[in-house]
Image (cartoon, rainbow, N blue to C red; front, side, top):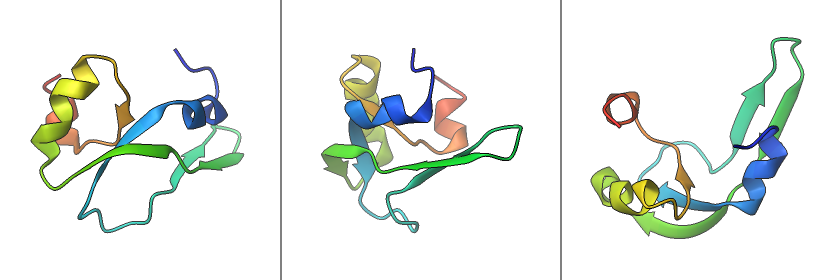
Length: 72
């Protein structure tokens, strides 16, 4: 379990090809401190469902829409 956002940069990232925002993840601590990371990409998909099998197998991390993450 990562303890700090910087630890996520060592993980493989599965990205969605049509994501509107650039591939920067911004984390904000309760104190207001911010940390931006750019995860390394391993798999780029055009269908978010295609990310589920490798994610559930523990092969990487991804940013999912809330409706998908809620069901995992």
